[in-house]
Length: 457
Image 1 (cartoon, rainbow, N blue to C red):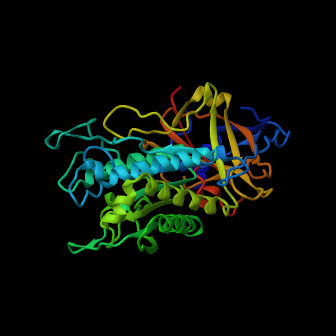
Image 2 (image 1 turned 90 degrees about the horizontal axis):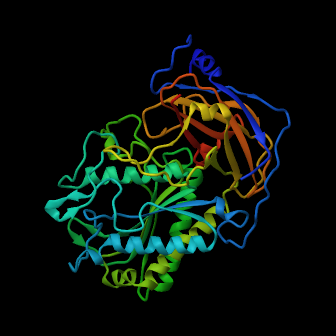
Image 3 (image 1 turned 135 degrees about the vertical axis):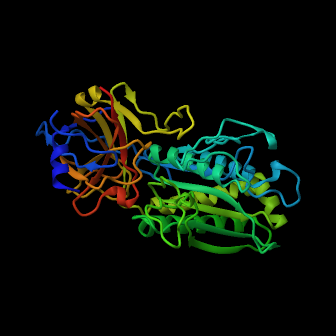
């Protein structure tokens, strides 16, 4: 990032202060140009009052389970996407999408019993990106171009509609700033038209994000082990453990920032990938009749859900450094799940804050969601970028310390800090806020940042 750009934006951000916790001479940068904020302390009182961790009996995260957000994606769904159809051709009620939803809802129930906050990409047989194809008896909402490739609709292979749908789900999860994403599927084990009548579990992840090896691989292994164990106990037949694999399936893949000979088509990966560890678990296989029957039953669905949940236990128990960011806007706390907007493009957009509100101050609650106390050298770091996208898919090129010390919070503890901004440009931009110590930042460890859009008078 050019130093001149840094100096330009140094005048845009005013000050940031830690509060006691409680509920035109310079030309504008061009779209996509990022500039680093510079801010000074408006008060020298140091850290405000720290809110203690409430504590709980949660097996998932005992210090403060409500601060943990798990995103559950029941695979497929909607009129046009059954997933794997019933091999016995009994209809949609026996297809993959129905079992995946049932398992997802059971997983939601288990997690909420533990006090965990849950975000579902769907809780019924719906599609976020449209499902309107009367030729197949589907009369849902109009299709939307969510991934910005200029194409919408239901093509013969269904990929256009699928990619827009999965992008909408990723946008929802990213803007909710989930700690992790799990996409639930049922496999069809075939090769060259040959059906393999075996039962198996396999979990996929990507190792191409900054946190892929350090966090997502661990999550994938924990989920795989949990599901294998639970399904083995529930099944009166032999099953296979097909382990974990690093494969860039769309729902777990990072964006394709530059094409390569091996990856010439950027639409085969999301425009905006998951900003947290994400795994896709094939909990079982529909091609073995006994496994299919088990996963159609409440007992089998409960086993799969319990296996995933036990995997989360192991993952969160070994995540030392993590944070949760929540904007506490002047008119009330911003909703966890963004409200879908109308139109033909992406339905979910970053929370917008008017310039007048920014000049007063935007409170942000920061919570330690890891298992270790924070080091005493963590600081608030932020960057800003002009953007017409729903939110930024990666951090701005410049992330700078804005002059705020962060208390060394213990697990589950939180504090509120208020960032006052003076943004002289009215064009829409995105502010990216996270924590770092000059060596690493928490967004590179898989803690989704807080993103706020800045616009208006």
